Length: 275
Image (cartoon, rainbow, N blue to C red; front, side, top):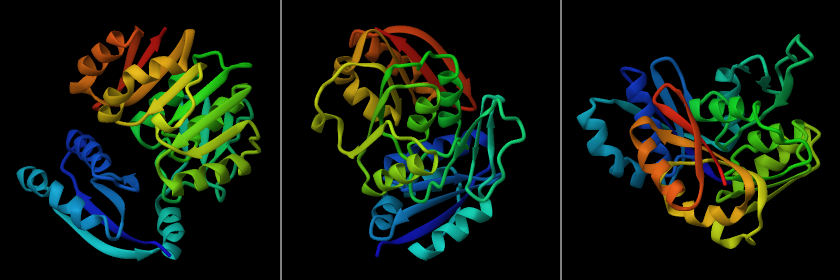
């Protein structure tokens, strides 16, 4: 059984919270919860010491304090249920836990999510923006590639928007197990999830590619992702801090994509490209 460490960071403001979120993802965080003045992060127990050492100088420079406590797998759901609140995405989509009642507006897409140790609950700005932008795209009958699927929240939304087939990958075994579970409880049957990195997949062109990851992965795989998007297809990416927008935009344009637009929420950006 895998044991985890729950680390609670005290943050001073939204900007500090956004940067810390980004840095936590870089050092292999398993799951993140954003609260008013705290970030609660979960690490596999034997991974936390290395992450702590990497973060040390940044935390000291920003005067960010934290406390860490061991938490066994069985305690995860209780901790999560105590803090998980439903999310309304622009009156278009409602994300809730199994123990929350459905939203009272039946015209809103209802997504049930049990994230466990996977990223993607719509609470984070990047996921929120990806879903908001997906509302403006035509998924009907389309093929979709969800690169770094986490909880499969974007794949589930894609199917509910009419996608004909969805292929989702993530590097974490726990994410893939969780993705399949979430697909099942949402009655989705067009999603195929695999534990893989991009280079391990068979290159195939899709109508729509979704990539909510981080700047480093996006920059490293921009050229390869060009082989996964059909001519006139769409690429939607997030996980990009405000300060990194130009860097990411330039790399994808260099890789053959056409930049369309950017939206922003907090310190994060979501970019839309076509090909």
